[in-house]
Amino acid sequence: MRHRPRGKSVLRCPQCRSAHVVYDAALITGQRYHCLDCDYVGSFVLEEELPRSVEPAPP
Ligand SMILES: [Zn+2]
Image (cartoon, rainbow, N blue to C red):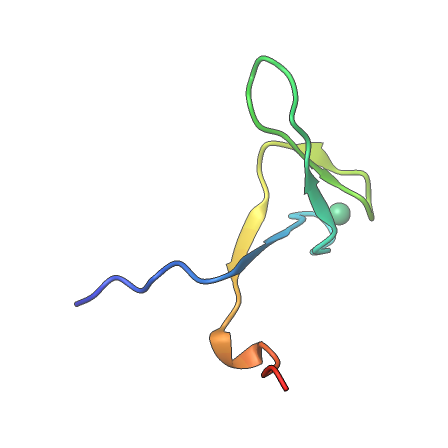
């Protein structure tokens, strides 16, 4: 079995499933994320890998 190369991934909010999650460099505790849609703030977010086939082909 081979490990698949890390493709593109997107962060998703665990509350509203929005992909509008930004990294909030913050605090002593380390990483924190902020959802722009529902204002969720926390260190836990969902990470979803994007399948390559979804990417639009360059012209
Ligand atoms: Zn959210």
